[in-house]
Length: 623
Image 1 (cartoon, helix red, strand yellow):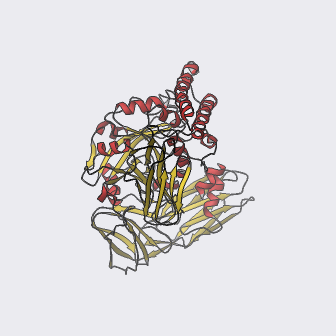
Image 2 (cartoon, one colour; image 1 turned 90 degrees about the vertical axis):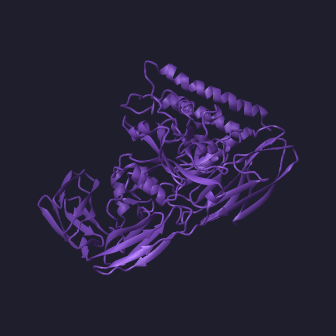
Image 3 (tube, rainbow, N blue to C red; image 1 turned 45 degrees about the horizontal axis):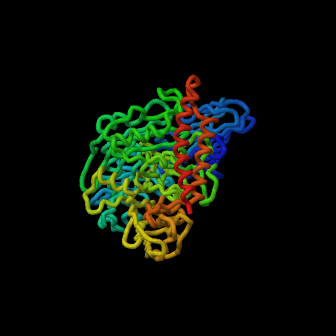
């Protein structure tokens, strides 16, 4: 609620109040200062703490006064602006907390309640993700692991194979064990006794097994250290990867808006080499090139480090929105990387014929605005179709590009910040909560083979269910040559939970749809090319999907008719409007060196003009 409110209004105080609601939750002390300076303190239910131990509580000071207030809580001062609200997290041992504001003092009791200690033993043969909570919502963690919460505010941590001991209170506990998307979860209630032990074993059962048929899953967009609450080693990332049964983990170095590029040293010292490698698990360092006006691009498989790692951020050595992203894509390509535009759409475009205007609000964010140009120039391999932002809007953009004959692969990247403990939104979630699967066609797992499969379009993305597509015996990325009037049998199948609709998409919209798990359809070739992809859609209630509606989408099978690629006039016009919007936005809001503005803006315009030539040709040949 706080994140949603702040994103909508920019009002921090209102965001804090929205997060509290009408009644403070467990472990929260709510200090309210009235307009006349009067002091009122309310608390939520007591948070459980081990006898003699320490726990964290949150203190919110919410002021209606017209002057600045200084409140001392448990010996710590908190300054609150007029009409504002602030909070602080405190470690406490006692069940009493003092609140002092001027001459007023309140001693608040019942903030925590001590409980005797017990030991919880968690066992899994391959590592897992665990969540342990008491009835107040308090989270319990073993020592030495990052304490994290997902987008649904559920605490979690990862363990290595074997048994891990957790000190817990002797009260009823809810334990959840999971291992990524491919395995069933286990939920169990336990009641440890004081001084005793209680065990939970998790031998995960498969929901589906893509690797058995050559599909290996990866998260291509993860940050190891990206500011936040923790400082993590690569070994911590490997533990999380193993606990999620994720085959490929791509740890991208990147800046956060300033000159500091987090994990730059990791990339510089390991570029081209695996961080770790086995038949089932590979880690590799990469780069997220960031320009907040034109878009973010990451490179998988870099054999070196580009000279320019970001542009357009004030206070850095590259403060201008120049050179165009096309230069960054080309340089990463020269270093053997797969180039993928990340989280392409922040604001949704809900219908295929929507105007692309939403991609320009707010004007300096993360949208993949130059993607439409760079894809036309052949500088982009893939698009993050499943990401931390709007998947449905990304689908609209992707389908328009496909309908202009461009053969981008669908990929996925969570943009998870492993060093973040708690939000915002999906930032602190587990790696691989959405992922891309690449078909390696019987080859063993390697970054190079995975990258080659992405370049060839042999991919499917998901944040929960497993999705398969068969087009006349061919799969995603394949090219089928037909004559007008030829027929193709198409079959899609989804395995898993949470799916409401299974759909076959093509350049003219939905080809067929069903509420069942299998969809069969016959396509008759017309006088122009087409593409065929499968997608699965659902709601937000599925326990395997956190922070987004259920979604899966294959890369398409491309159908050439009489040797012609697909070319749809409506999509070409949409992309041309997109190029016009990028040019106008750059002219109005771009950061260019005042002494060289005409040349720098001209370089971007030249990229856009070359792309216009491509889409004009699509218009010329469109049926």
